[in-house]
Length: 380
Image 1 (tube, helix red, strand yellow):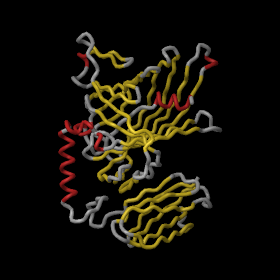
Image 2 (cartoon, rainbow, N blue to C red):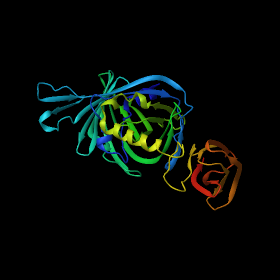
Image 3 (tube, one colour):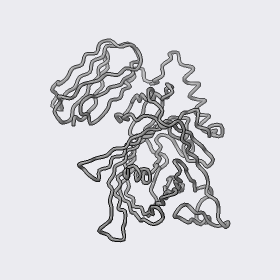
Image 4 (cartoon, rainbow, N blue to C red):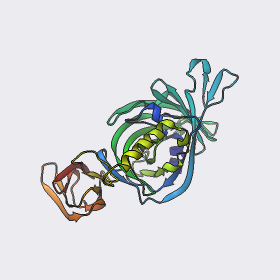
């Protein structure tokens, strides 16, 4: 229980944007987004031409809201952002913004081309970063990586001090198409991966009674052209404090496109959506997984990685084709051959039993007619 509680208090709602700029994806005061908590699904591989199928996920909680607002100017001279008091004369106009979700307020400042996270606050917890955390650098392009250390200090229940430190690594690690829980398919989707390590010490009057927590939080967010905010998110938190009893918490959130309530007042993104709509409806072939190449690459995904027993492979066939999946050792030895046969156009799933494979790295090879795609995975 302690693990879940502190996970919810400490995790940073970090944002990163790839191939999209501040104009289309910057936080805006007054925007509201409705999101649904849904079943968790492994986010799968990184790289190009990924197909993410979240079409069968069930709702866990139908409605959460995320609202962005501006802080109130105090005595015509300063703002209070949690622990921080910021003089209005020292900042640019409209550079401060508060994001409120799950009864917690997250404090941001836009400075130059960076969105900084100052801290967060709720009814039981106040956290302040000793140096603001870079939540986003505008723009972040595909494959771009940003890494930084952080330290914070905070108070729990108004009387129990705690300190945290760690490393945050953010990468635009994949792009492709996503199938949403509503069944809708969106192309031009970029995925942002964030890994945050957390080392926390909960202070006591008697230092010998200090408590500690070690955690790794892995967050994925999917962004689609024409939408200022994410359309899907997965979170996996692993408590590694006790290596003999590792605990995991996982969840996912779906941001239904029709619930991006800010869009009516977002001229920039409405223009993008109109342009995409015109492109889609002028195609001669109705293909939901768009790829402008004359000989497009295979859109696929696989998980989990590392795998213990069963590897799931999902792929999209643009045309009917015979499919074969093989697994090779790193030395080039064929260790598994799964002849699937001819498959119709559409999305398909295959399941490969990896139980008897030895631990190590392998190559998954997918062949559809004359197309061959290869990727590495780890057997644990």
